[in-house]
Image (cartoon, rainbow, N blue to C red):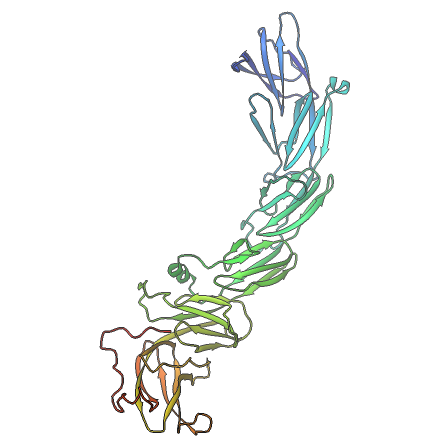
Length: 476
């Protein structure tokens, strides 16, 4: 048997013992343009992505023709550049053949279907023209995401390429700064959740310059505390699908993008320019309960909400004892769960804030006084960094408030008469300063009306206080 081809090379040949149940009994290697002596029988001959079944008879030379298929790269390939071909060689066994970074194939005459990169390629090698060995050439295109910001690491993530037209769902990955050789066509390039579509002509190269993005955490915060208490790292969601870590540089395709910080209710947006590094300097606030370092039932126990100044709804809902990061460049307010509307103010120029907490227990002492009627008791801030005021303090139970340290005053407002519209009003206030770890108890008067049902309330005896060791009333 002799196989003519435009070039030298090797092929595989298997002797077929039976075809009803396909059986091979031997394998040999043959060389193109070199006669090979074989015993009489049937043989399967395999080339690149092609096959022939032949019969070898005594005294006769079986002639086959093979052709060279050349894929011409538009730029010299490097060691880490990628070019791939996939195909089936024999229809009965369907052995897949995967060819990587080889740009020449030797194929037998006939009809062949290949997957070159991610694009199907139909090759017709039949007709009189292919009775003699031929050379066919296909000009490739090349694409890469070029790494231009050399002071940043390039091993952060690969880029992905997939066909942008048709119904093929195939994706191929490649390292940043390395070429991917493809058939001409339109492709979508994806880098860390950002996309760009490019059309490639034969022999065209497309070197795409990415933008770079970094979310920079304040250097003095302890992010491992977030992971230890929450059981997950602090992540930034980019373009609704990809998760970024802080303090790492990520390449993305230029253009508009969105992001959402951990625990945030709102998305931020950025416009990224090719070749430029955009750094988002995050700010941080941490509200510490008075917990021991390993007191897991206490750490992270309460919610912490962050608000734009005087906004009714928070833009971040997180928890205590962990750094809460945000990207707002304006004044914000911080509210601790159970503080009943009192907030801590953080000015726009402050990047990192840590607030300690204390407990305040307000014990009502209701009584009846002639011509005096309480209508409001609330806690108001005295420190300039505090904002807001508490909701009404009830007079039927002890109220326990977790508060950030600072100076507050308890205001008691009452009427000096019976007509709410015309009666003069009076007030008194009690000022107190809370420091880290304090647990203070403060009693206050509350004047009840003199009508039936309230007259039985003693004028000097307050409602019962919680016994020592009993929990305070529910915070609301």
